[in-house]
Length: 499
Ligand code: HEM
Image 1: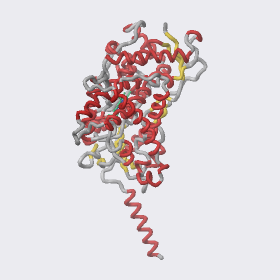
Image 2: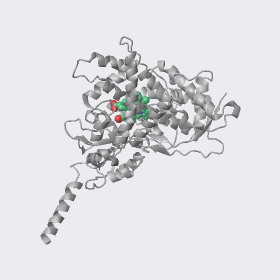
Image 3: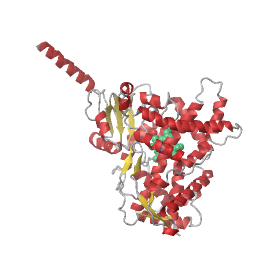
Image 4: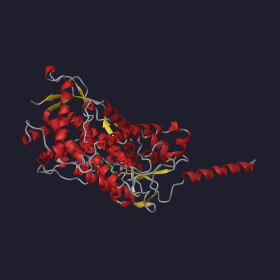
């Protein structure tokens, strides 16, 4: 009996020891539990994990190590360490997992893939999107058309002149397709109506998908075996269904493009890519195939729609919370642009206060607070970071929000103060800790388009309207919701034309 008891005790001790032991030189963090690791803790961080990760950094340091099941999760929170991870080749991969294999169907797209294929596809995508007008003036007309549609929607909801623009306007409802239509024009040469039910459905699917993506890896990543035996415990089936709706939408678009395709006159990104697919038809080693085109379009749609929409929504929130900033924005717009035409991209260099305000929106909101996870899994061996060893299969999470709210870097970081981006002569200054689009090798591929869209939409709305809290309404809070991206909670504003 005693021997059996000793055997049981030894077994439990060994089990405990081997399952709670961390690798040598693993970054500091909370104790690891057998089987689950720190999964329960990661889950308890809920919908806004960047805030809890900030807490963890205060407690354990700039580089914190945890485990989601068996998968190491490394939180990186200082500017120095984030810049190092972002610029290093060995950290330029994205994490792989069983879930990812289902999602990108064996390494397709651009957002989640790694290695030489990622480099090639990122280069091709960026070059061709640029050639097609990405971040150029030629897209201004499309953005202006979109803006006019937003103005019309505001007039309709607020009751216009007839009802003295008195009805509150729900901001989330009017900005819905604003940025995505400009992007979609480059990809597919098309524009959707604001009220198009199909596009609205896709946008809400994108939102759901982003909400379901846990930066630390969800249950399907931590416990892949569960996905098979207890599929209801993971969101895998739901995620795949939502992604299938996006893929089908893009497949149909590619089919329509094929029907009227003229290789000598590519109209948009889809045509340009089809040309490349056709050129490589007999090359068995090629990365250029239609499936890859579908997945790149899905990635651009996923990465580009929510982020731009959320940033614009934040810009409206901050304008009603900080009316003195709106007045200064309007004063500068009146002086440089006047009120007879819409602000143009050519005006940007002459509007430093507007630019500083947009930078401050991007800093304070940090709509992609944890960027997109990196990983050293593609490197030859485990990576070393600030004296710690980061195992190859780690998910490395960059807390951009922590950098943007670090009181050691920014004076009064919680305050909305565009002046921090201006020198004493009112000229725009660059701030090396300003990294809303990430930095280095994986830096956002859509930054130029996003910045132009934000400028055109924000300055157009500020030029045209007084924007305020509707009478009798409480001032909205600056509380946010989301996950991988964040957005303000729903709020309404009063738009009144400035004449
Ligand atoms: C305000 C708007 C936007 C913000 C704040 C933003 C932010 C980011 C961030 C933080 C990353 C991750 C960087 C990293 O992994 O270290 C990223 C990646 C990416 N973004 Fe954006 N983004 C925005 C708009 C867009 C738009 C409009 C597009 C569409 C073209 C886009 C496409 C991408 C892609 C494809 C990646 C992955 C790049 C890669 O893995 O090589 N983003 N973005």
